[in-house]
Image (cartoon, rainbow, N blue to C red; front, top):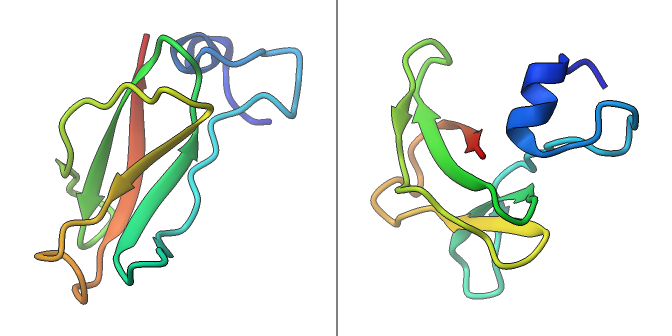
Length: 93
């Protein structure tokens, strides 16, 4: 899947399986009209969403999140809605 063993350890994924990986989806419009970022999550790991306007400088967009299911989600604040942003997810054990 392209991740080294250290990255797999940090994410809590299985380095022997291409199916076990951290996957971040494109922001999706929710039923209520708001946007959200979703990713595959591993119990016991914490995640933080970062944002960028240029893909070079990244800043935290969320606080640390500990999902209670295998899908992590972060609602994009309405202040960011309509502005061009890139998002990525940082993970820590």
